[in-house]
Length: 279
Image (tube, rainbow, N blue to C red; front, side):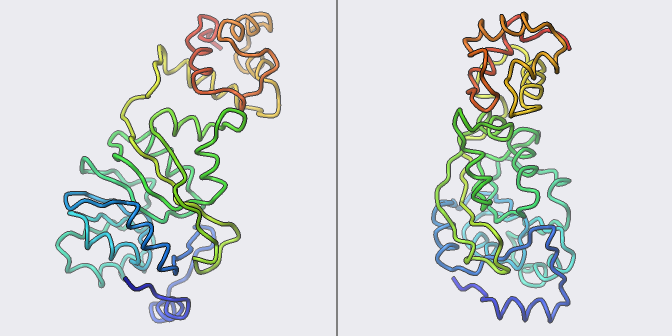
């Protein structure tokens, strides 16, 4: 296991006329200890199919190829994709997809996602594969910003839409902190290795009406600093007394804010007759 250092990466960039896109969050892993831990925590099996998002220079790709049955490397940057093809094109278990990951449609099942993903679209990537994609991965082990990892794993009191969507379908956990010094260029924030395990095609909680759940959730978080009651009155366009009764039916405090509720609280609210009032 050998990683290119900062000097080696700069040389590769110069030799291939690569222009780094700061807006895309291109930060390359240069810490061998972190790579080793990531591979160990992934527990890759010989029959695994792994999708890697933003394969970059192929640092992680090389280790995945050694262990998995098939590695599908998705890389949007055309120059980086060409470098990946030149390096791994002769490997029988390597497949390159030169495309935007948000447009990528998996054609295999089951599969896993193991990646150091672009930080600027982290939330979109997680939502796509955990709650929106028809063919969901079995699990994900991804490098994300520390703040995002904490948001995904939040408990009642600090909940967000992202946390609810992920926890509705899976079991997320932060498995390792990663210093910003482990990357080049050095990002402005520290990272964490985030495990999203046991991803299911359907919600892990009993939902009577998914549309009602989504509507109440979206309206509830429309102004997180405001009390939930005020958001529901304005967003669902129903009288304050009706909202108060719906909250009482669900066992939710009248002055509660959206981030204070658990997933079970939201489901109770959406499943209540008044939680399903049309806007």
